[in-house]
Length: 356
Image (cartoon, rainbow, N blue to C red; front, side):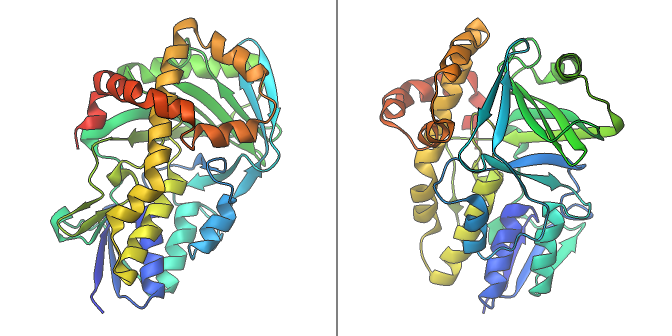
């Protein structure tokens, strides 16, 4: 069998490597970092569990992956505009929180171990030219950076919680969030514009959360990163398959991309083993999801004009939040009508998302 070369050892690249190795292919993964996940410093991130009726953990298992890393469910969420609070309970886990980086129990290390155990060769400190790779999984593209995440991870005495804050004063056109699990916490601000002010907005976020929730911070260190989306994407080019953020597979609203990244890696491996069209498979799987995300971003930005008051009022009237979120990410009829308008809006306001 032909040796498969993969550029990048993130979740999408490793998912592809694991499945190709299981099918008997020799696999080499080129990773410029010193280890898997080294671009993260213990960040807590969410495996979204609302866009599909299949639980994400079951989804991962169906894609040949083991849950050999910390993966904790959350079925409750606190929403706040900086003044009022709304507690939301979901009928099943809304998301699973994982840690990113080089520590024990972190997702990157769990996937790395699975790949190595199957005979995948990971070459750290090495890069592969894009044109030499069979699968490109190199993560965010510098020219397509459309989101910046700035924050801290720390130890705290606060009980397990997940909080999202929508307030223009602390995250203009973005949002802020805090997650706590077993005394380990992550507090971040996400911006989609005005990246140079990220430190200012994060300091405001930190003060706002401490004022509202009065928690202690111990052993803090920096966390965060960047994200990229783009709409005029090539999933397949000159025989190369693009997966994860290298393919623009990122939610345009919240930035949740791990599930999509892993799924695209699995699809890439399947297309190689089956001889099927990767581009056709990935379009079928993601087009509706990505279009829905573009409309959601458009509506979010428009609601920010009154500091999310309209959105806040609407949230109080939702009866089934899981059903609401599922419909938001499955290209409902209203989203189909709004998509052309949302796309024109994105071309003007998120021009980097159209520079592939």
